[in-house]
Image (cartoon, rainbow, N blue to C red; front, side, top):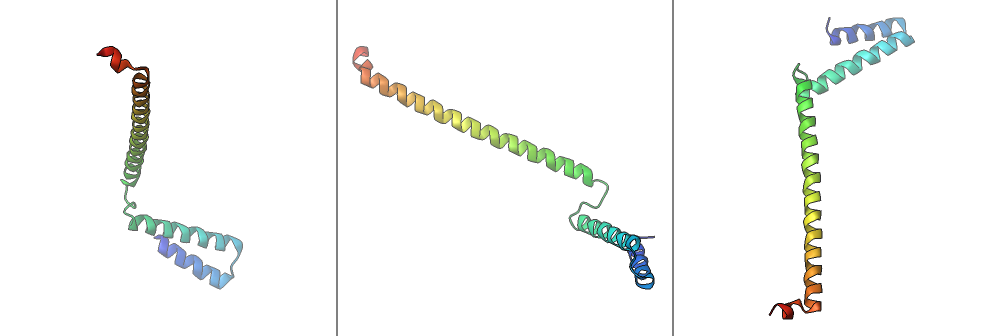
Length: 102
């Protein structure tokens, strides 16, 4: 029996018997399962390889985040080095190191 058939029977039961709590919960559960299956199917994640695809996407996202963090860290390190180099050059000029070398 498919989920659609089960949902159809539960709705028919709710109409004929009146909507008792157990029947209504079963209708909601089957409807949500059916909706989730449809959404996953439309996203291309309804097959058996879907978990592997999700795991691979998570690994790619983690690698992207690591690369982004490393790039920012490297950029900040280079910026700090450039500022310190300029500061040292400024101190050397101020102290007249150029005159001492000539």
